[in-house]
Length: 373
Image (cartoon, rainbow, N blue to C red; front, side, top):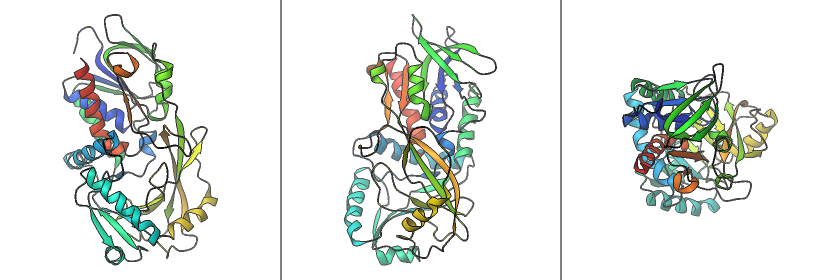
């Protein structure tokens, strides 16, 4: 560790992405502190998602999402195995439930192949139903590399690697601000029961829903370089009864999201969601009345859904950089070339497939910061 600083690097946010950034920096011999305002790691976006490992099918050619999703997924399965974290590589079907959707599958398949996604297959409706009886499918795409996993076990493993390398993950310690030091590096103000000031050579902000607020607390961060944020709420319903399918079942994507989908979780229960509703502030309530809307949507691909079989489960909020009707942008990893503060990497809009991409995002952040000098 550089003797002039308390830590080589400070990371703001102990969700999956922040911890992956800390792990990547630790792996390069840096001593890292990860600051988390909540009382436990992974209490924000990382704890309220589908826990899906995405193949990387949909994302635009040349985008960070396309590259880092595939790289992250390829790294994730071996990481989970090495740390004995639960997962199922169950595969995923993207299903056309009517003839009008079949052409959309061709577009998705072409993009998946462009993104170097392995093992993709175009299935007839009959072939899809042979894999998953009870499915309404005119045609489908099979992505065998997709799966589900224990995201909290994953984050505990990331924390373990950081701590094994001599770093620290500090909970109940909100980030209150930072300022660049005259000779390089940063002074970081940390709050909580025992407020303190830390110094570090490198600073990473990855607090999910609070990304914009964190940037605003950094002295000298240009206000016009902070992208406008939006809160995209999604709710989930759980099925009462036996899970009908073994694989993930997805409709073609909707504008701004992947659409309400089905998963058979690690406990063997069926969960449907999320939908997408833009809200003015994070809101984790689930309206039971939405069960009927969900049921109508689900019956497009599973006509045999029993009446009254859906029960409210949970809600998540995604840190979106687009509003209703606007195109969905790429991940934003903002370095000194963008904001003018050497040694700082600010992350914005890390929503899906951020969890799948997290190991690769961490590697990308570490590479850019250390190449930056």
